[in-house]
Image (tube, helix red, strand yellow):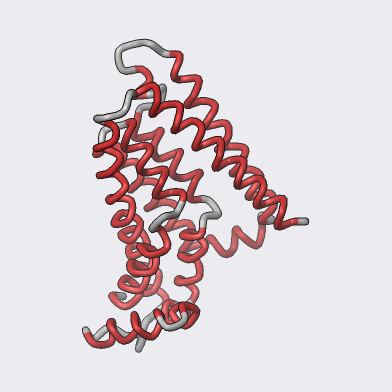
Length: 222
């Protein structure tokens, strides 16, 4: 289990660096309190990586990638429009808390962003075979494998149950490590930038992600 956990943690942390969901975490942390963003992202990550590890491959074969991309893109655009409309609320902390509360807002936004993202796909790949996936990383794969071996971690005797728990927990921890950095940066920016500007940037970013997801889905189908 520790081997699968270590492989998932390392690879997902590396994959999340510079990813759109890390940028989203930064944006959300600039708008909401850091602990609200942390809880929201943790909840969304825990669920979607359970989904990815357990039944992600089965669902991926049932729902065509084109429709999955279209649904995700449309939902993300809708979330962006909803965020921009929230800017009209002038109440005390209306724009900052949102109708459903910041934690739920963060969780929904992050869940939508992670659907079909490279970290979700990588989680499925690692779950299929934690040892084999390292071979796709060129020179970095053997280096990571060797480092794990030196501390006594290898794939020998790894059962399906151990792989499941290790990949689920490891991928979640990897996401939290990478997005934790973004949350720190976003919290600092949130104290320095006007709230209205943050709201506009967040809404525009959601819409941009949605359009990019739709474009990628259609382009792949053509």
